[in-house]
Image (cartoon, rainbow, N blue to C red; front, side, top):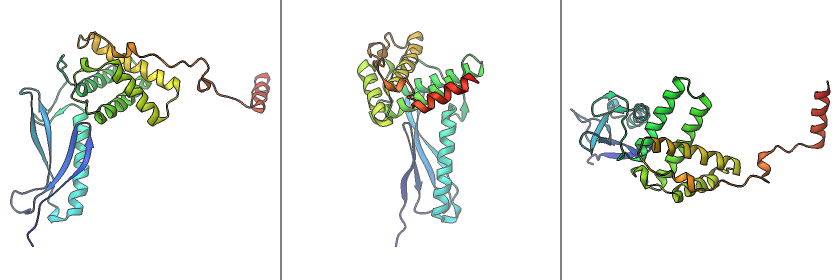
Length: 232
C-alpha cells in the first residue's frame, strides 16, 4: 500500500494555526514540519514559514510529541516579538492601520516596560494580561482580530463584557472593573492618535448600590468572635 502524507492541527494560538505536516516519504530532504503564515510588515503580505521537526526514524508518536513542543516554543517566540522571516527580535511599531491583535501585543509590551521601570505594580501588569487574554478570546470568536482599532464601538464592548460575564460568572463589581480597564486600553491608543473616541465611554457601569457581592456576609457567631478579638 502506498504511504500517504499526514496533516493535523496540533496547536492554536491567536490567529496562528500550527499544523503538523508529515510527508509520505521521509527520505532525503523530506522532513516533518509545521507551516504557518506570518505577516511581513515590509510587504504587507502573509508569507509561509516552516519549522522543521526531526524525523525520529519515522516514529509517528515521537514526531507528534516533538511537534507539540516546537509549537509551544513558536508561541513563546512570537509572544516576545520574534520575526520568523528575519529571525530577529525587535520592538514593535504601531500605526493607525495596525490590526487590533498587534495593538494588544503593543499594549502588553508597553505595560511590561512600565512594570520594569516600576511605573506600575505587578498586579496591574497581571490584570492587563488577563484582560487582554479575555478580549483576544472574544475577538477570535468573532473573527475580529484583524480589525483596526477605529472599527470598535460601544456595541462590541458591551457584547464582550456581557459574553464574558456569562461565561466566567462575573458579578457586577468585576464587570465594572473590566469595563474600566478596557477603557484604559482604548485611552492608551486614543493618546497615540490611533482612535478619536473611546468606545467604552458609552457603556454604562452596572449599578452596585444594592449588590451583595460588594460585601462579605458574616454570621452572628462570626461577628461575635471578631468583636471578642478586637477587645483583647
